[in-house]
Length: 97
Image (cartoon, rainbow, N blue to C red):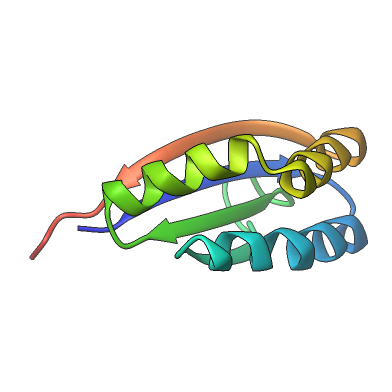
């Protein structure tokens, strides 16, 4: 069962692309797939949704632990908070159908 971390941001698209490209490689190094998209309908229209998907809890936990002490990741995250605003974060665990 996959574990996805979804983060909803408001920022300029050029900042999202610049930061997203940098952080994607870090997530991939730790076993996650990362995608970013813009919300087009509903109450969050205009915001950006970043999704990091891990194959399981173990991989997610190891990645979160490693990234918590990764200076490059922490620097990118600080920059993201300077140029954008985080509105929400959810962890979603998939169901095997």
